[in-house]
Structures are given as C-alpha cells and as structure tokens.
Amino acid sequence: MIEIIETGPFNTVQDLGRPGFRDIGVTAGGAMDPLAVRVGNALVGNAIDAAVIEVQTFPFKLRFSASTVFAVAGADNSPLLDGKQLLPWGAHLANEGAVLELHQPPKLARSYIALTGGVDVPALMGSRSTALRGNFGGHEGRPLSNGDRLEIGEVADPAPLPLNGLAVVDPSNAMSDLFPPVVDGVLQVRAIPAGEHHLFSDDGEAFWAQTWKISSRSDRTGYRLSGDPIKPTETIEMRSHGVVPGVVQVPPGGEPIIQMSDANTAGGYPKIAGVIEADLWRLGQARAGGKIRFVRSSHEEARRLEQAIALYVEDIRKTVPMVKRALSAMV
Image (cartoon, rainbow, N blue to C red; front, side, top):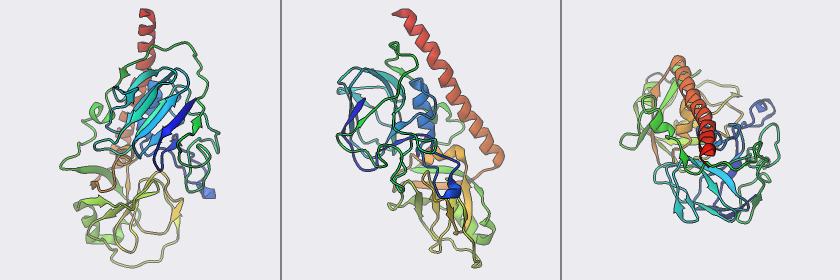
C-alpha cells in the first residue's frame, strides 16, 4: 500500500485507457504520455498496461507502507527518495516508510510512477484509468487527495528484486534520430492532412506554416491553440462524426483544437489534420504556453515510427529480466 502525503489538482490513476466504448459515449482516456507508462511498467516487471500514477501538478509526495520496487518515467525531473536524488527512468527499491517526492520539472509536463504489481483499483470496462468528466474509474473517479491510500497489486514473483538503480536511456535520447529535438522552444509535431483539409485552401497552408501556442485553456480533453486564425473557404453544414486523440479540429473562431487522451467521442468541427500516434506521447508532455509546429507526415512514416517505439519498449522488457538474473547471482 502507498499513502498520498501531498498532491495537487488533476493527479490521477491512469493506464493505457479503455478503447472500444466510444459508440456509447465513453472516451478511451488513459495516460497523456502512454510511452512513459509502457517504459515504467517494463522497468518494474509489470504488464505494459498496468495502472500507474500520473502526476501533472507538483510537488507530489507518497509514502510506502512496505518494501516496493518503483520507477518514475516521463517528465525531466529527478525523483527524491527520503531526500536522496535518484536516476529518472529507473527502477528503485523503496523500504517500508520511505517517502518518494517529485518536484516541478524544468520543461516537461507529466511524471508517471509505476509500482511492481500496479496500482490496484477496480477495473471498469477493462481499464483502471480515471475518467474525470464521468467521475468513474481510477480511485473513486476523482483526482488523488492528501491522505488517500492506494493498494498495490500482488506480485507474481514475490522474491526480493535487486533492481535498485537500474535505469534506461529516455526515449527522446534513445530515438533522437527519429524524433526531432525542440528548437527555440518549438516542438515539431507530425500530422497527416485530414478529411476537411481541402476546405481551407490557402489557409490550409497557413496551418502548416505558422507556429502555434498551446493555450492556458488546454486540458486532458484537448489542446486549444493560439495563433493567426484559419478559416474554410466555404461554410458547410457538417454532421457530428467520431473523433479520436490526435484529431485537429477547427472551430468557427479559426484557432485549432487537438483532441487529447480524454478526447470527445464525436464532434462536428472540420478536421484539418491528425497527429500521428507515434508523436502523441511528446505532445502529452507539452505544457500550456508551449509552442508547436505541425509537420506533414505520411502513413508510411507513422507506421515506421510506431515500429521503432515498439522495438524500444521490447528491448527494455527483454533487458530487465536479464539484469535481474545477473544481479541475483551476485547476492
């Protein structure tokens, strides 16, 4: 069990979401940075979709009531265990009573705490993710509060795991040849033209050419972008249609909205583009006030990047048991 000592708004239990229920109005939800969840779970020996804690408001503190292996992935901050700085993107052993502390990251938005056995909250529709708009899932369907106690799932191999300090290269560096760096504060986001792109004519090119700013009105449902408005060349009446994370819609005001993890299940605004799935984890780490620029991509590039991410996670999943066995042989 763990106890939440200090938390802010909107810190929740999340996993990789509950797809398959959009037809009844239930958003898939899940972590804003799904790659961090997969890596964190791989480091502690969980299934990649085990429930974790998503931290997006800091500082955050929790206490372990028993010895537990944990990992912190995601944002560019270093966790503190009983005041001692630890390697990020690493697995560590916390003793009974130890306190884990996370402070505001310098650049990125969200940290993820994975625990061996996963956060044990009830699964609803196949997921333990918190659906804030629906007030269900996660821990009582709400953000975490000071004093909350969370159970940890049973571990298949209860033997002590000498993993302390095992860390991996974070994805931005490990796949730097595939994911362009942030230059002058601008995150490049790859996208594919969507169904109504042709309605914008020259304004469609303005969408790709300019740098957009993520509005303070952004949240897990969608990122609202500020910039020079873009307008369709003709006004057409559109029926509501299904939308998914990554879809970029343009409301009448002309400033786009990127649907994020808690994306609406349907909407009637024209779709100008769709962010490729392989770039959503980077977008999920962008802060309000951050700058992004859309780069034209293709289905072929999207597929190639998805395969690279899968290989990166699989390499971690294969490496961790090998390190465990090697360390066990030394003790």
